[in-house]
Length: 161
Image (cartoon, rainbow, N blue to C red):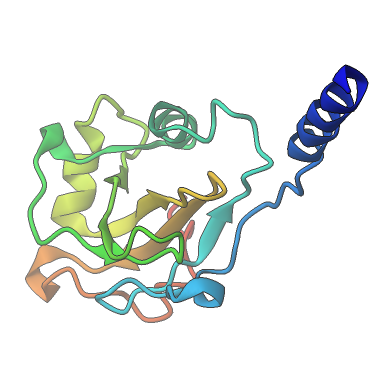
């Protein structure tokens, strides 16, 4: 009897260990959307198979810093936060952060220039069921043009030298 109990426990553990790991789940497969509630596309996905450190808020911010992006200007957020439904049972969730191009200045100061002139930025959310990070990345116009999205601004991300 004891043998069967141990065997059953071992099979249970093995099943948990061999559970299929996926890079992400398409939000639409579970009632979510590939668009934010404001209609911006979730156009970049960082795979849940990435390094665990990258799949954390600190990891995303460090990665962003390495490509000359930083958190918003001196930590201030002007405008309404966006929400996304990643199909993970959490419903519509507010963005984790907005990260802006910082012109290589860094320290959450260079992003002030992006806020004043327009340019590349992204918002991100983490899918709770997989750990994947979803980004809504775009190029926006200057405040004089109400920070609207530039022509082809969802595809031209990274156009700033």
